[in-house]
Length: 530
Ligand code: TEU
Image (cartoon, rainbow, N blue to C red; front, side, top):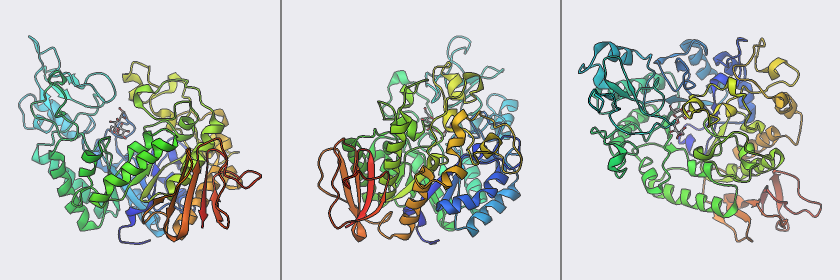
């Protein structure tokens, strides 16, 4: 692999360790499982793997509640195994990205335990946001901030003080105005860079800093009391200088629809990249997608950062399910149980979207199972573990439906989730999961997996995809076409009218077969050379 700015056009595969592969047969994915499946990732052709948190954690929020940032959770393995994994991946040309969760810690983290024990006014409490309550006896929370997962953001401790948590009560927010909080995270970054990781994903990257007055929403949200505060940029500048010592990269989880504010995180001395959620949430619709692509490229160009293209992750409805719905846009607020979906249509669109995404300039994120065309699973209510579900009062299905253990082998128990011994997966796999199994798809030239393997091979071996400019070609309504360097053209037909491809073109790859007249059908993408 290239050692220079590899991340500018990389394909980065997201592993959710709990659900990727289970090496010890206890039904929970682990590092042994990942190590056993590294050849699969190499064959798929990805440049890097991003691991969602693998640290010691009570797993209240799938590991985003970290008790020790320098230890691997025992359910996943050991630090020694993580180091072996990083080395084995490197030997296959795959880089490792870890997930840092700076906004909060687990309530089991020693700092929070110390803060509880030390009491009001103590230096231990100063690392968090502890406040007296309002009302005569302090029985009301200090302000009215709503949690990211619905409900309040404040929990009261026995001595009467309240602490802030933007997510669950088991995830107390750190006070980023405290120098020890900054120092600790700089140490954690070095700890992982020293162990050979090539990059860091920054969780909830726009939420860390809070207005110290903690003004309630009744005072308005302009400026917002905790989203996108200016102080963040100073933090990321110092992080960048540490990453530069190691030649490592950052990808920020920056949920900010405003293009100008978003781009500030990507200035040359801040984060290298950030997830493009405007692309993820966009409907499958030609005009809107083109507008998002144009806005994305326009906002990245002035800061010199590459765009990222993301269709799916561990927080959102899986792509084939979303694209099979009447409303194909993604919105946390409208997520509901039992929304009808046409999986055939969704799959067709997801295939088309895969080739569109992989032809755009920048880096691409692929969430485990996306390459298998997995749908969102219906998790029986009594098996749901995601706190987002409970905190919504049971109305939101939560995120477990996109976190179901992967199917590897159609004939094996639990679809081969266990690499050495079968164990009942921590989330139930749907009945038809075996139809998506890796071994079955590997033998099927028309499978989603085969399409991804072919597309990634072509992308890697063809200069012109990934890096470099793109130019829109004139098309009819409902069709997008753009050219890349070396005469490569990507054509996407969203419309019911079949599209004639130019004569004398070489067809490189197509997401579904051309029609009998050699035209591109609806919801199909072609890569051609003219
Ligand atoms: O998600 C943060 C985030 O994206 C939320 O603010 C998002 O808006 C929310 O899911 C919907 O309201 C990250 C992780 O990706 C997620 O899995 C964690 O649960 C969360 O941080 C807390 O660490």
